Length: 358
Image (tube, rainbow, N blue to C red; front, side, top):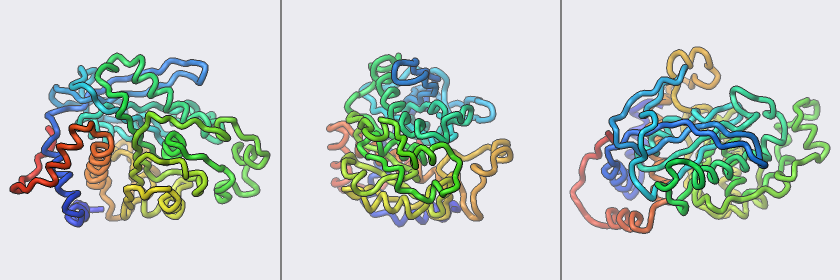
């Protein structure tokens, strides 16, 4: 997607959405994204969870070298603000807590605290459970433990509003997010993922009916009030989605990949009990939702970093991150902020050029 295409998409938005996005950009404080590592201690529900937190920060923006990545942020910056909304992030299979660092930084710039962890046994450093149902069973538990930690033990917890929590999930993380907000998975629905001759352990577990208890009766986390679900790995039908009642923003790539098909994501949209905020990323394959890659990383990992002809991942992420931020601002707004946003949309005023966050 070229920059011109991205601008054309923006110009095609309804007037109310344009006004809202303008209000968003004008209301952003002069924040950088603070960045710090976290570790959720091991407990009876699982091993230690390692990841990072992005926070609003009053310092000047900086760059942090995390070989081979360089990300935007300021290390260990004091949290700026109070009663801040929290967004927890679930990555795709074989990914890491840094897979959506640009989206996390955009949210932190806009006044959110963002926490992401690497799922044990299903991350780029440890794939020991990637092909087992146990990875599907424990992912939503990981998210619950992360929320527990952020509200109960994280040093900056006094700056959080426990009533304003969202979730961002990509690919298998999209599956994770749907389960966390009430969906009931049925691993037998996707016959295409387990052909008869498959030797993947989870396929044998499904055929034998050897399902972990947490897949049969997964625990919803009622603290999550809204979710952005991005190109999810779907093992749900209408019956399995009927308990999903929180507002959702649902994204699909045009071409899919890694077990995710455009039709399977469209089926989630169709089967949800209430229509989501629906987006299709034109020209995108599945991995286009990951943060843009630096040249060295693109050379090392072309399968996740290279996009199709004419698709500009950096330009796309500018629009994508703005939509994610705007959704969470609407759905996790405090009552006072929600009223101000509504009044801003209803009050005539001379148009102003939005300024970029500093």
